[in-house]
Length: 72
Image 1: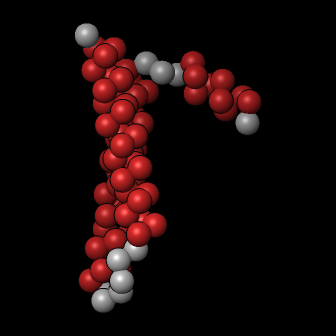
Image 2 (image 1 turned 60 degrees about the vertical axis):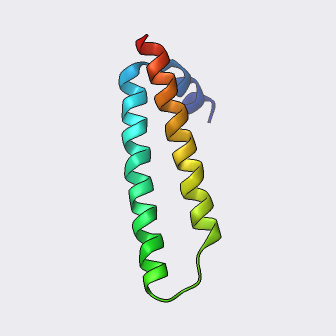
Image 3 (image 1 turned 90 degrees about the vertical axis):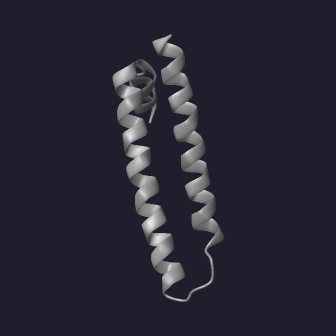
């Protein structure tokens, strides 16, 4: 765990942030499709999945802000 954590802290350049943003966007898209499928199947709304999507979007926005700060 320590090795992974230290590797993550060293890899914080713009390219790394862009890769993580892309990964988050892909994950958000997948979760939204899953949620739409569940809702389309007549099931009740899944609050846990909705909360997960919101957390991923917040993290993506935070990373975009960090990337903008690095660019300026």
